[in-house]
Image (cartoon, rainbow, N blue to C red; front, side, top):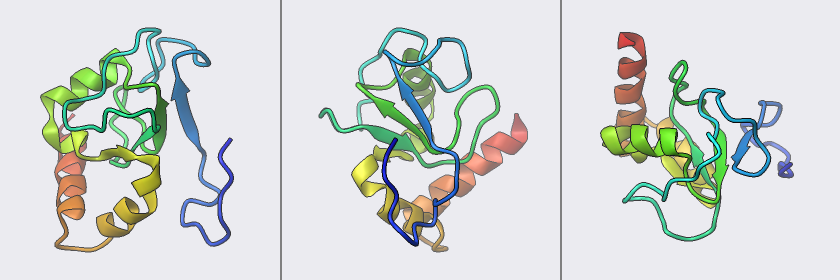
Length: 122
C-alpha cells in the first residue's frame, strides 16, 4: 500500500488498487484477468495510473490505481469517452490533477463535471 504524506487531501480515503496479478476478476472497475494496452492518450511507460473522475456505478471506481496497463473493460470505456480517458493520469500527477479538478474553469474541472453529468444520466 502506498505511503501517504501528512496533510494529503486523500488521507483516510479508501485506496483502490487494481493489478492483473492480485485482483479477482468481475468486480466493477477491476481487471478481468486480461490486460489491455493503455488508452492512446495515456503514457506508454510502466508507471501506475489512477482514475480521478467520479465513480460510474458498475463501470469505474474513483481513485482506482491500475498497474501494468488498463484492464480491457476500463480501456474500452476510456476509448469510448475521451473525457474519462483524460481523467486517467499517472499516479505522480495525482496531486496536481486533484487540485485542478477543484478549481473552477480548469480543463480538469470541466472534464470532471462532464463525467459527473454522464453519471447522473446512467
